[in-house]
Image (cartoon, rainbow, N blue to C red; front, side, top):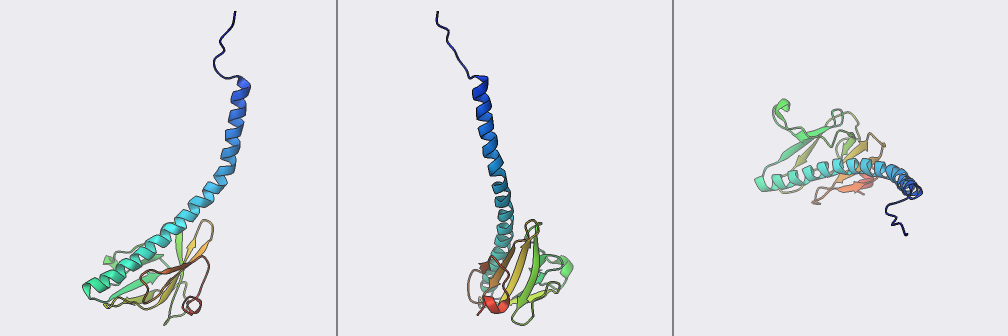
Amino acid sequence: MKKNEAGFTLMEIIVVIVIISLMVGFAVPKLDSFLSEDKSKKGIRIFCSYIRELKLEALKKSQDFVLVIDPDSDKFWIDVDDEETAQKKSPGKDIDIAGVQSGYIDYSTTSKIYVRFYSKGYNDPFVVTLKNRIDNKIFTIAVNPFLASPVIYNKLCFFEECFS
């Protein structure tokens, strides 16, 4: 009499569990660095899209706007008469605005910087440095007066480096 054997042996199940555990063990550190990198890129995307929208808005409305960037509060907004009513934006909860610099003001980690966006579609040149709090990665965003999109560097750059 022949017996039909259905199912898996205990040894087969243990081998599969060990293989899956090894795969997960190698994947988790990679996933963690991937997620923190994504948070940095999200902060960069937020800031860059705000800059592009502001350039278009100034051109569309034929009106000058002034962008205020405050490294102390990690916020940026359009300058209005009453600062309390301004709609302040942030690059993200894990992203700091580490510093700002324009052609008129030296690199600052504490002072607000005011950047004018003109009705003709250009702006004053400036550089913003963002820092990821989780892994301390630094990104520099250089906003050229005549380019539609900012240029992003994966390192700390100063005004002279970005615009030379």
